[in-house]
Image (cartoon, rainbow, N blue to C red; front, side, top):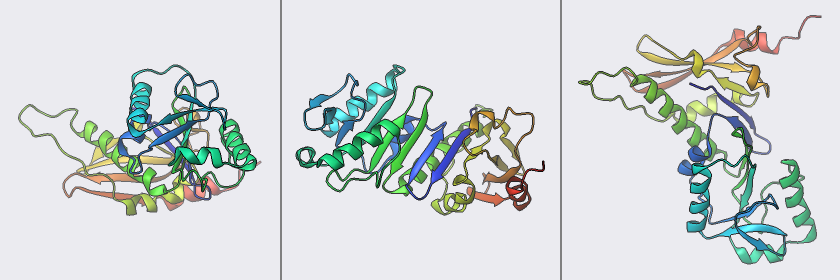
Amino acid sequence: MENIYVHIDSTSNAVTSRGITHTDFSDNIVHYPHNLLLLDPHDPNGQYEKRTGLKVIEGKEAVELYFNELRRKRSGRETKWLDFTDPGMLAELTPLELSEILYLGHTKTQLHSPFFYKLQNNFVYFENARTFMRIYYRYLDEFYRIMAIKVAQIVEDKLNERKSFFRRPRKVAPIDNRILREMEIVLTEGAVLAFREYEEKDRQAVIPLYIVEDRWWKSMQSYQKPPKVGELAYNYASQTWYFALDENGMEQWSAPIEQ
């Protein structure tokens, strides 16, 4: 089982992650896009829009078809888009607003806000061929919803791996939003949910957490493992989630490196 890496920038509402897929995103968001502005000018999908010089996908059905196509095949091309409400407002964008959108699409970094008043976008979405994602969420609770469902699905699969034929499958409840908010102290630093170290003990499924900042690819492979800073646990007897912060691990992580 792959680890999940999450880094939340609570200032811009940008979430960088690996291990959470486009399908997880599109299946579980609340504010489903009705139109997309594709930020890659060479994207073969969509229709050309002359004001922006970019391609657009208009209508919820067309957006669903586009998302389904992304699920079926990965071309190796980066996926990047932002949603918008009213196609007519594209023609109302000022040169300054347009330059900010183009800069955002090119650098994946906002000049000001990544949410544009005229477009009323809820997301700005970037995903590279390695499924490394960076998404701006107007409502950060959308990401917590996606993460809550994803983690519960993984734990449910793990609990049922060795299920006997006569035992009913265990169902796992999504993580309560309050628990995820408690985890912000590590998620805003950049943390790995170490499913490779998943274990079951005392009627609980336990996932260790490590702070690795943006060096997720070294997190479980380096000779010197970073200190564990907490555990996320699911008690399958009481069907409740818990997050326990390891204060000692946090102190080790934040301590200056001796020369």
